[in-house]
Image (tube, rainbow, N blue to C red; front, side, top):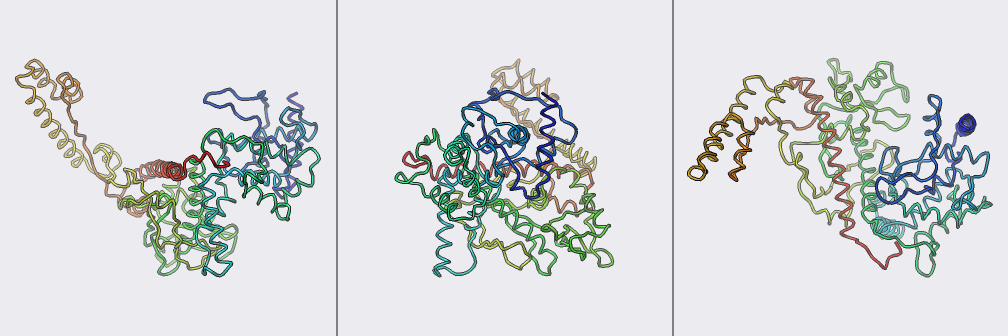
Length: 550
């Protein structure tokens, strides 16, 4: 059994790898249907029979590379968002040789091309969209129609690009309900001999496809292609709001790369605001991008710098643009000294996240805004041009969101001992901070003892004996219903950004490494909370409408 499965899998992988066009590769229909669905609730056993295969080295990676991954799915994610790449490879390998029978799969076309499976998924997302998403589509369609009619002039406003990213980028929300909708549509549109429909789903460029898509988008009680599919048991508005947030983030990542590519030009802006989450980015004045003169090929010296993490490639495919660089002693471009310290400490971080944790301004807190107003209106001042280096200002009129994390509104503080260990202060400064904290704590101890005089003399005696042990003192004070505030030896690091610390040669390398790891965690948390805020704002605005189709 094990040997047969390995043979089938190897044959399947060879067939998939021989097809250059990813959309032409095959997938089993159960992958897009996400069948079998996980049981509701946490810690539930997996559905189906577990198949364990001993694969040769590299086979699993090959299988993942040629299997179907739907928009919004990831290898490591919440179970609703988790891709089933190895499962897809095994199921497709079996189905190439023998039909898989099942009460759900019977009567459905077993093998689809990736393009057709994505077409089926696109129809599903059009039919099962939240009001947050529909609001974006409505405003984008209105803007587009006004420009076509000549009512509005100028380039497309940002809302149209948000809608395009929501439809086409890797931002979709997933839930068991949407997977059930895929199963419903698959049984309805793709019976065993529906090759013509599979062609329509694959091409997505015919009048029949347009009819399919419009019917899904403009569902009504009188003409509903999803008629017979059960309504949802609860609201998915939060997931839809999160998907809109992710679409905006896609645009912001694109804008940030364009901003950095233009940094080599004289007078290029050195600051911009990324929205969401609403934080400012500030590039050091000397940092700029460098375009190599050899087109898609890098000179050996720059190739070695790139491999060592001393620069990043922020260019489009086939057009390498290296950043950050500074002007060397002879006027030539050279990597920023110590930049590789950060790339080593942040190994595994995506390019856009690395850039933001480098440049986010931690000295000037983001000003508070109205999250509800931000949800209702797009900052149309931003434009998303084609992938070029045209001089277009992307930074006018950007609103900040309403959530301010504590690290954005307060200086970066640490204990004096940590600051000393990182080489930021000397022993005298450390000892002075420790003495100051000890004196402040002992002053509060005396206040606590004085408040108990005449009330509990024995406790006062015990407290006086414990003045050199703050935590024992605090425990004794609680017996008298008193609370001791223990002052720690705190030191404030007047840091503006990680990039500024890299440029400051007086800061030790171990301190740069510490700040890189800290900013990695804090930026990640800030983004997670911003997306959570967007989900809650969407639910608060649109809520649950029992009369809605969704």
